[in-house]
Length: 157
Image (cartoon, rainbow, N blue to C red):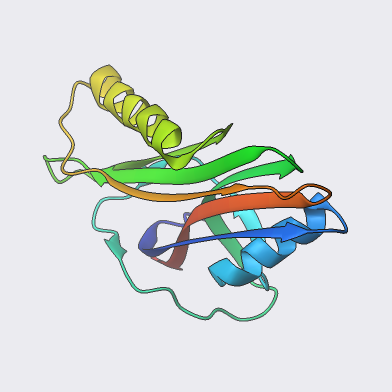
């Protein structure tokens, strides 16, 4: 059986919790609109012909493939997570890079820029414009935090 994604959407969220990092992660998923799915992490290839769509509601409990970046932290830490994606200029699909770090959006964007350049270099290809989805936040003292971003595949051929 082959599952070749035809559509994808991008989402992100961040949250803090006085209870646990798991609860912060859960609320960040809720804010991103993907808290009711069973997420399966996949790597970084956007198939030929796949198109970006608006986020959509999926059935509760659906097994959902995504490229997921997340960063968790505790009080006093600055955390960031995000993704970058771009299509190849030759029309043969595209790539996604995920990243997370203790730091801010600006540092994360530079890291993701480097990753996307390297993905293109090792394949000897050119990429169209790179798009970014970044979340960051300063975790309040006494709390746990989570930032996340995802590229979610929705339909398959």
